[in-house]
Length: 114
Image (cartoon, rainbow, N blue to C red):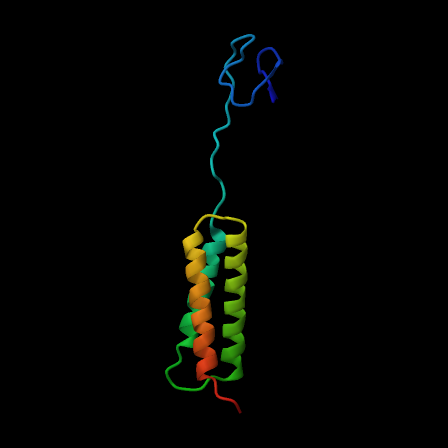
């Protein structure tokens, strides 16, 4: 409940005008202001991680494994939070998780023990 702008009586928040005095009310438009920044950032991180995992020269050194791991874990965490909080761009978050996991598998499959 809100108060009328004209007579200060209590009215319903969705009322376009006051039933007592007839004064028009400013009805707040229900705009979805949530952004999908978490999904976008997670997709970018997953893309970098996936591209970094595509090393065609052979084995990976420790720097590549750690860097890919940090990018992949960050991507999965952001995408998971985005999915858990029901943020927009749910499909992009799922794609980010998929590419991060594929990147992990490529790095682990191509890494050679020393």
